[in-house]
Amino acid sequence: MTEGLSDAANRATHRHQTLYKKWAETGAGLLLTGNIIVDRSHLERPGNVVLDGNVDEEGLLALSRFAESAVKAGSDVWVQLSHAGRQSPKSVASEPVGPSAVPLALPGGQFGRPRALTDDEIEDIIQKFAAAARTAKSAGFTGVQIHAAHGYLVSEFLNPLANQRNDEWGGSLENRARLLLRLVESVRTQVGSGYPVSVKLNSSDFQKGGFSFDECLLVVELLNQAGVDLLEISGGNYEQPKMMGLDGLEPVFEESIASSTRAREAYFIQYAEEVAKVANMPVMVTGGFRTRAAMEDALTSGACSIVGIGRPFCVAPEAIETFLKGELDTLPSPEKSLSIGPGIFGRSSSLGIMKVINGFGAMAYFYQNIFRLADGLEPDLTMPILPALIRHQRHELAAAKALIR
Image (tube, rainbow, N blue to C red; front, top):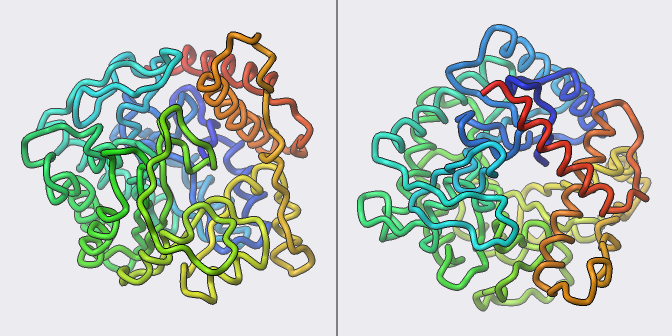
């Protein structure tokens, strides 16, 4: 749900207010922002809002208006705090950082080879998360979420393929989870005991040798002792984008898990069902939910306490409102028909390259519709994804060039 709506100084804008007011008016109980970055040197994309020590008075005022737009319309709104790590594109970070100097295994050259963080830099990042949480609370956001999924920095520390350190931050799971636990501790210290702190965690990276589901369950046990108020379960990363319902270039690695007797449409619900047996906090699942029957089944079966919805908010907020009123049983799924097509780049195009192009094209389709909503326009469900991808790439490059570095 990354919005890409900031100004050249990475401050919130009136477009955030329009978008989140629109989303809050659907009747959603809780809105989670897209990536809000704690270090402007390592953005997830050029249009990220940044919360760091350089937020000026104008930026704080814009942030307050952003929060107010959702709260006044009746929804809680939590800031998703993130550091992009090695998934920061070259357009904004020529030298990204990560736990180790392990580059992303993706074609196209969009991401540079990361530099391994020093101990002092890791400690500085912990302080940045804590300060950002404090700022979010003071701006009127009603909670925060630490993004430890989808291959961003905290997720990279958990992933033994990306984290090849041999110090206190790498090796054993206890060491690889140290950053996440320190972040929860430092954020809690800044926001106090009565303020919601959530964690978004991968059920698995779905990569052979990556962060596994067994390790996920062990991390949940550690988080039980850390004072986390909500755990959101997701999965995948840029190399294996299961969070988008897509497969990466390499074969998907899945551990055996007891299959449910119920028909499931959500990507991670069976993993969440096992997590819920271990977790002391409420569990939220996002990814794939489209029908009332599946959502109600997930809730009544105890697989999760909260249902998260993403893509339908980008293309059909009115349908969300109708759905929540009980007047609609199935949300739109335009992503099922999104494809550039195998022949458009000639017969020489490999299946792997087409997977990547279709994946990024589908993302661009939803990004462009977020822009339309933020500009007060209706979404365009018929938008072809190749033009959407081209527009998106041009926009991102222009926004990167315009950034006040």
